[in-house]
Image (cartoon, rainbow, N blue to C red; front, top):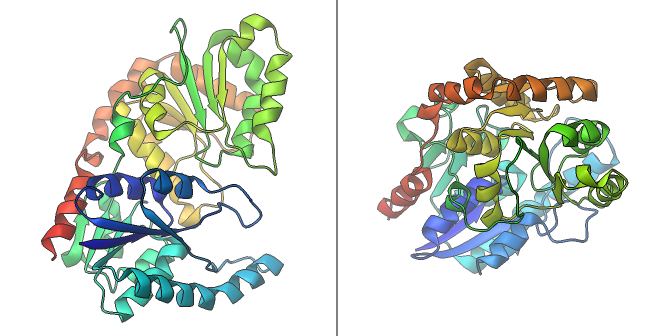
Length: 365
């Protein structure tokens, strides 16, 4: 079977791709560059290429609520996205299209539906974006991560699978750092691109953190901010005994992430769906810093779910960095209580989510 995979949420897509790739012909439609101004290949392009799956770059526009020159250019690109999607589908001739939402997945799904190709979608977040809400009307099946999401879609064709988590994340494959655990370990991440806001807060309180904790810091490597190089330079000016407690990397690979999570006592991160499901899998308390402009405040909703369960605290990125330091110390001062509370969330995590999606696609033919 030929399956075209597309959409904006690459991490759950990879989990499903890894289930499908040995038995089916796969194509991936996405962004070759993470940002229009970037010259470096995107994370999704690199990991799809690594799996030796054909990658098709789709130039498409997204509709935004803010009027600007960039939003005008995006608006012009909208019809271009549909035309490019048609060319890709005509070339690949897929039997099924599996979309993970977003402005990339929408034109591919709509054009595929017009061309009589069955559409399947996965919604990662509690509150689906407009692309998946529209596509859900024409989809053959809809897979969702959270039970709360079901009222957005026709219930008869909606399946609660949970969010697919990559198997590599659930086991220890590679050790990027040789760490002897003598003190609590913090893992700080802003996702594959990193977060300039999170990096800036950590930079402010880094000396205090390194006096008490071992810090693994995944910064991202966005050229505009140059956080990785700046933080490396800052740490080099600290006393040597503090430098030894800091492990910095622009990226943590799929094969390395399982090890990092396995040794972490606390995660400081955004509150995207991938992150929260990985935290459930490993039962790691967190300080969650929701992206303020996430669609429909989805990250705030994820963070509130975790906070109400007693496994995380929420930090507003507009607040003072010292408040972040206080939250870190609060959680690590009673970490076992936070870990024990994960039993309230175990019903959300389905280890076989990717397998359920695979079987549903295979049974459709």
